Length: 314
Image (cartoon, rainbow, N blue to C red; front, side, top):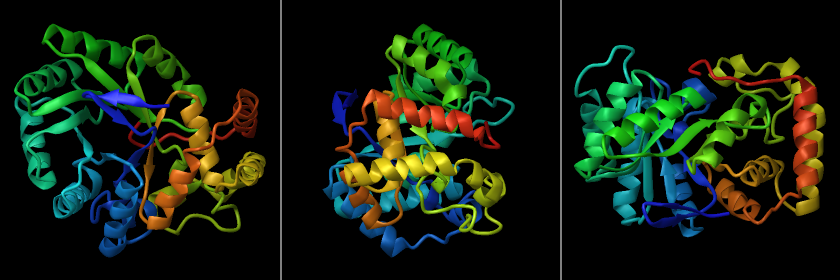
């Protein structure tokens, strides 16, 4: 499945860089691992060589350090990529905040414009979307998206944008086998109104990769270890077992089954990569086409396990 953004055809998967940042809201605190810039540089080269052209980041990822590193790598390699980044709005709207945030992101990313710019949280939608429409009309933003929004938020955002000569191109929400019940209404609405749905945390920060279980939990004292306990790993064991079985059948890693399931649902997965071999594995997984029966069985097992995931920011 392929999607068009700003006249460019996208691969059916985007690369996420949340784990590239350092410091506040960076890799060590959230994921329990310290980022290795040399390894990330190799990852970027491998992924772009394999055709992954859409790269997603945010001003809040490592307090801008993710954007800065991504911008540096793009410049060093003169890479032709589609850039996606996000602005986290304040609880109380301040006039001009979107412009100030965008200017900071443009500087760190070394770009004159952003291909798709997201409001990272549905706060003060009317004011922020009106401002984003103005920035798009100036040519600083090519497409506008909303992250972590409900159907009501999406509808309101699109109304405000259209009143200001723009439109909502995409939604970016938490989407995985462990959040499908909560997000089904949003996905249905997006399909009906031709709004592209980008899904993050498809792998639940590693819980659905098959790498971790109740005996091999997430790194201690990381955000993901606190949100995904050993008991949750025990409950999702039947789901992981089925994913491993399908992975063996298709000749791919377990993680690629969760990604293939999301693609089958009509979602553009955003998959975090920190190692070159992960990029290779992801490219191999793009050839997996789950049958409707296989996808349905995974959903039933996910619902039966009784585990749902929701970020503290949602």
